[in-house]
Amino acid sequence: MTTPQQPASTSDEPWPVRVVSQKIGAWIGKLGWIWVDGQVAQITRRPGTNTVFLTLRDPSADLSLTVTTNRDVVDLGAPNLTDGARIVVHARPEFYAARGSLSLRADEIRQVGLGELLARLEQVKKLLAAEGLFDRARKRRLPFLPARVGLITGRASAAERDVLTNARRRWPTVDFRVINVAVQGPSAVPQIIDALAVLDRDETIDVIVLARGGGSTEDLLPFSDEALCRAVFACRTPVVSAVGHETDVPLVDFVADVRASTPTDAAKRIVPDLNDELRLIGQAKQRLDRALRGLLDREQHRLDLIRSRPSIARPLTMVDSRAAEVSALRDRAARNLSHRLDRAGAELGHTLARLRTLSPSATLQRGYAIVQREGGAVVRSPGEVSAKDQLRIRLADGELTATVNE
Image (tube, rainbow, N blue to C red):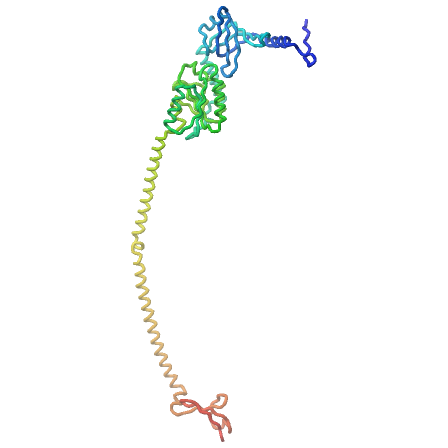
């Protein structure tokens, strides 16, 4: 026999609140009995009753549910149950229509032991490693000198004091932005994840440090949470993990870009030591000075060798030798020229004497004359002229003009 279905609600025929509550209760009731894992945030035992109320919080998110159970169930399964304990409950979800609230009715509670926690952490470790969250190739190098450092740690904790004091002792001007969060308990993971998101969005932050002092394995469980590991992996800013002591290795150490053994070690890794840097600068300066002096000495030696060469040491020697050669050549040229001039003068004298011997001037000097007609023709016989011809008569000391009469 089928139950008639409730007609769908409309604006004209809306469901009453009781109908909605009944439907919600029916849907939730279909879930049945389930096993739930969580962390105890609060335990309330009402005097005079056997009812115990637990606030069960998700280890990785800011979510919680109320668990109602019997005192005998708690005493049997987790007799020493305290706030912050990790438990597994067998419960059935219930919806209380009168208050419109959801809770779990538990009939069995098991407190998770350390061995079981470690086994779960090993499973999570294998899962994250298989996904590549531990890959060394993706780890980023820290900046040499960060402009600003983000620090996530407990309020007024020794870890905060160690990081700040040692970092400022190494580099006095280092700037920090500190966000204090819960570092253990059910609210630790959500607060740390929120702080990571805030610092990762801050453009002035160059590196983020997660710092916490030592503690038991249960105290350090938030730093092995899967959600926190994924949040660290997703950060764009390099992350340094400084959780616990050297022997403490939470999962966030494998995901972070740099693992520091202690908060003090983290301070040494994020900033350089000013004294060491000054010492290194001094050593570099000394090496540079030695190299420069060595270079200058080598070049000075080369210059000395060059200057010691004869052509450089006594540059006038070549000039003097060449000057002597030039002077000798000039003297030879002068003698040669003088000899040629003398010989040419003698030849010219001989030629002049012969010329004078053959010249008509010598004949004129002896009293002879040369008679020329007009036009320059020489008269050699009387028949070559006529009466009234004009004649030119050249003498040794001049000329005469004559007219032929007959």
